[in-house]
Each structure stands twice: as C-alpha cells, then as structure tokens.
Length: 434
Image 1 (tube, rainbow, N blue to C red):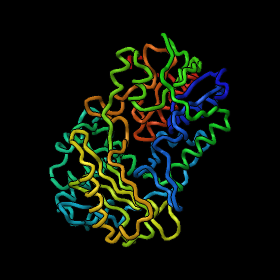
Image 2: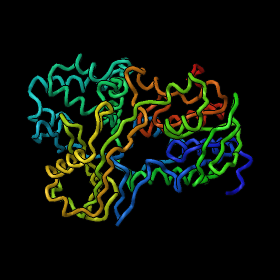
Image 3: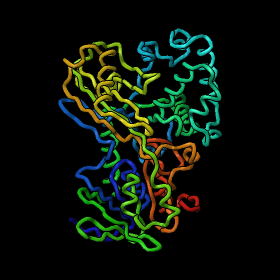
Image 4: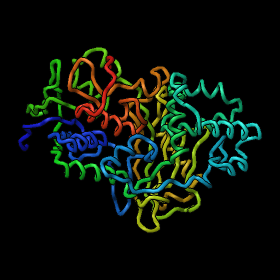
C-alpha cells in the first residue's frame, strides 16, 4: 500500500457520501485520503453493465429539488438525464388496472376514484404545493392520512404517492412531515433517471475527487477509528495506523457501530435506525412486448414498475431496462420467493410475453433503499443521527441516515457536505448530544 502519511482528513467509505466529502475537503485545500473496503468505489450507486444495458441496483431516481443537487453543482457536476414519463401510467387496485391519476386530466378521467375521492385527492394535492410539511414531523403518515382523508381509495392513492416518493412502506412509522416533504419535492421539481445509470454520478465524483488531489485507496478495510477525546486516525485490517486529526465515517449504521464501539452513549443511541428495504427485479429486455406500458404502481399492494430506458440512455437500440420492486414493510416478515413471484405476476400483467425477451435478469430479495427511515417518533428528518459526534472532537458521520437535510441519496450528499464544512469552518453544527 502506498504511503498514507501527511493527511489532514480521512474519509472512510467510498459511496456517494464519502466521495462528496473527500472532494469538498480537497477543494478547500485539505490533504485527504479516502479508504474504501471493496475493490471499487460507489457503494449502492454502482451500475452493472452487460451487453450494452446499464442496470442500477434496483430503481434509482435523483430528486432534483433536494439539497444534494446544489452540492453537486457546487462541485461543477451536472447530472445527465431526463424526468420519467408518468402520463398514461397504470394503477393496480384490487386486481384491476386503472388509469394512474398523476395530473388534472387523469384525475378527472380515472375510474379508480369516485367523485368524492377525486375531490379529496385534488384538494390535498393542491394544498401540498404550499404546505409547511414540517408541521407534521412528529405525526405518522397513517395517522395524518386518517385525519385528513376520509375516502378509502383516495387515502390509498395518497399513501401510494408518498410510498413511491420516499421509497418507504412503513406508514405507521414514517414521519408524515418527511414523507409529504418528499412527495412535495417530486411535485415541484420532479426526478431524473440518469443517463448511463448512477455509475455516471460515481464516475463524476471520482474524477472530481481525483482531480482535486484526493488519494483514493480501495481494498482497504478499516477496523477502528482511533480516538481519545478527539480523532487520531484509523486502523486498517492489516494493522496499519493511518493518522489524521479529522475523520469522516461515511457508511452504514452497522459500520459506524463497528468502528466506534466505545463512543459516548448519547451518540450511539441514534446509530440503530430502522432501514427501508425493497425486493427488486431488474430486467434487461431485447424489446418491450407492450411499448405503451411504461409506468405502474400498486395502490393496495406496495408495487413499483417503471421502464427507465424510456427516457434515460440505458439500453441499446430497441432494448429496454425495466425495474420492478416491492417495498417491504419493516414490521412484517418477508418471503423472498413469494415476493419474486408477485413481481413476476406484476410484469405478466404489464408486459405479457416478457420472459422470452430477457437478456439480463437479477433479483434482490431485500435491497437496502435507505439506512434509516425518518420516523414520527424521532421527529422526522431532525431526529436522524447528527453529523457531528458529541464527545469525540474531529469525528463526523455522513450517509442517507444522517443529518436533517434531504432524503435518500440527497441526504447522503447533504450530510457529507455538512461534515466537510464543519471541518473547514464553513458551517456550524448543533452541539447537543448526538
């Protein structure tokens, strides 16, 4: 391994959060080394390329209105992609397909909702555009819907929209403020399906970090953060000590607990959040049997279907990349085989004959979508683990479960930016116990 001395800061983890933090620190003039345990950087943002098809690890969409977009722009990174097409979509309810109500016309014409349900849905969608969603941070989504929506089908439709926007199926746990905020962001700014898959984001961040002088070291598992009352560095699996006065741990809650087993108790209590997971069927097809079926969501079942290649450059000419998913409820036991059959049956409804067109097929029975659901009990986004660890000066966290800004990948990038700015003196953090 090359000489790893002379560091101002160490970043542990080479996902989107780690790459972002390292690039921002280097841009501010810090000498940075990034240590990644696997052979490649990117984490869950990597894409698999086979036979000209680009497949993400499950369905990925970038939320344009989130704080992460501003951070990437600050680094000179513009994401290439297009928003998905939702008009002409389908909604599966009680075994029947209906028009997906995503706009004024489809809301009026769909037979999914009756007159009362349409009026309720229209009223709430209009109110959401100007709503202060933070008022409902401490209320669960199920309680909020129960109080504000009387029509059963309209309630199910609105729950579906929040489920898709937040990638979370936990209405009894999810903060209504966080869930409605995610939906509000989609309505205001839309999302992007990224050309070339999310590997494009990884490549752009890696190139930026490298150009700024970050030392990227892969195949370097970290086993411990060295600290007393302040950061001293990290220890690698081979026993090597890499020293620096500032350390950012950009990883999962389990990784943080492993690297900081003796952290002060007030900090550690927020390091075991409930993750959101999904069963994902990723498909590369030689062609779509039914070219008009591009998007569909389950209303009374937590199902997702989208042809990402309809707008993003992900497939060779004539081919298609399709992502099908079932959002898993963390309070219910999952059955991997049954979930796979359910996803296949969903495909059968939307793309009859799809099996004969399969070029690449991958099934992930329990893919982590986000490492920490922002819960009502925790007070929404503000209840997530803080970036700064109280009791250990110079150690910071970053990830999609950290900080009070954004959700999903936007939260990962935003928390990384906050950690970098705290180190460079460009921001201030809440000083209460983590």
